[in-house]
Length: 139
Image (tube, rainbow, N blue to C red; front, top):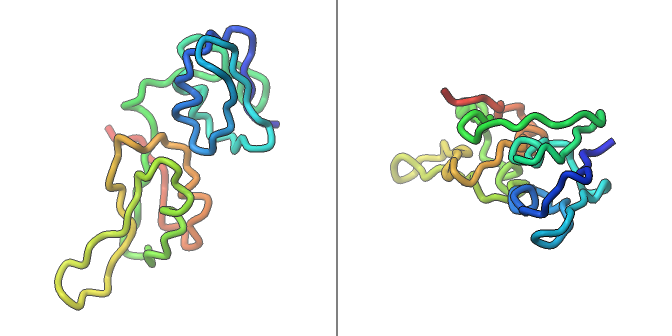
């Protein structure tokens, strides 16, 4: 079961703006809905909702979490092969491939280049074929 939005929704659109897969439908100041087929159960919508209108995949109210406590991808540069799968899946353009350290350097890897763009959805961890990405809260 995917996340859903109940009748407490006031149409602020915060969840719609942050959804990494554009699964949230609705106009500003009108109740929003989550397309069950697009939702990837990342929980971003629930973490941002100030109305408590988002229900998790178990039908329970999602917990709002301050943005500074959202997880961010941490990349193990020793095993990342720079395949770009994480970059391709990131709808928020938070990841890029590093620049070579010197001319002829072949050791490049994914980096979190725009942490403010990252919504902590974890899609990058799911597509990484090498398991080089972990989601962690940065304290």
